[in-house]
Length: 225
Image (cartoon, rainbow, N blue to C red; front, side, top):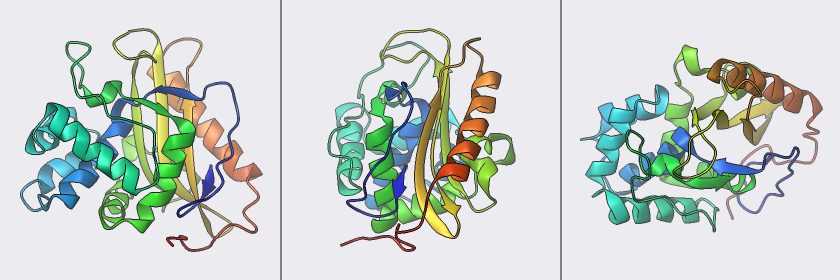
């Protein structure tokens, strides 16, 4: 977790610190669409990819950016401008039936820095607005902490690029603690390997985090300079 804006200190907890991004990787792709001036022609795909995590819509955005290395580079550019200086989006399909970008390795700390910086970037603000409209069926985790939470989840079988396994569930978002916006990234690798347990875990984690975060001293508005 961190305060919102650039250069905020990220605090971490727990042993699960990094894994593949799954559908949270759709966020920098959507930002690249806005930055490229393609939002008008891709609005339906943007809405579906972010608010309902629709994979076909996200593939449409990926294709509109040129696909492969070109699309990955444009998404990387959005990661950099919002404050994540290390993550690189996976350009190639590593598992048949799964998106290339979903196999991106994304640490929770780097994702928190990126989430915190989104409010300082025009394309980021546009995507945050969509994240505030996530469908009710996906408003577990951070989405359970308040009606105004802006969230994007990701889930699937496996934690490492190209490999299967039990479900990993993760989520990124901005929520409020005592009126202070907080960037929060969370993940669960449930013992029973199920998506249902994973989402339940994320709700428990998010509620615990919000109950224990000391927001005093954190910025009430994004620090963008």
